[in-house]
Length: 218
Image (tube, rainbow, N blue to C red; front, side):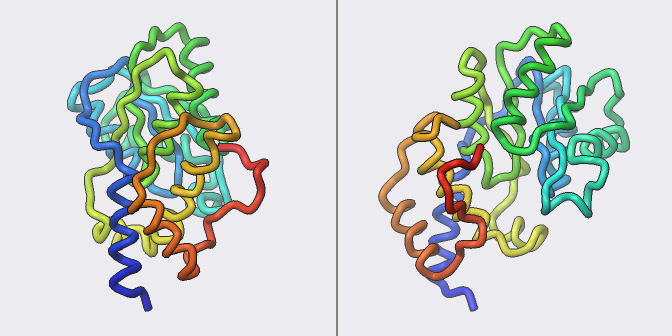
């Protein structure tokens, strides 16, 4: 049974993980692969609204996506975009990345090889991964402007669509705290009430997405 305090703490983390950026036209839109196909839907919506002339989908597979997306996250995202009317000529696929750092590095290299001039990136992720994706991109691709985006939804809507998200939000916050020291992302201020919410959720056992070593990559 999840207590009222646990839900309040989870909402605090949910709010913090989102950057609150307003989407605007960028050189390219990058959809970060995950278990959540709505990332592709949001990328398509932004493309159709004229926010980017080119979509890049990046991602291999992971334990959480292998069964749902056996051909790879980026491939399934591209297929979804084709179904929704995006022409093949407006998309690139990066199928190797297995973490956020690789998403950014491999996408940057792919665009450079393709001769695409990039000054700004509309970075599309799951709602609770906005800040992590932003911080990683700022570290690894500092010369471009990063605008974070995700599917607009509340925590309740996301939980109803995906399932229990508490552990995922706790894990994402842990990475924001420890990855800057490991060189994987820039450091960002974390308010005291967010830290307190994170610690309470850890104490209450929402720990399945925590990492236990200092050698993991972003």
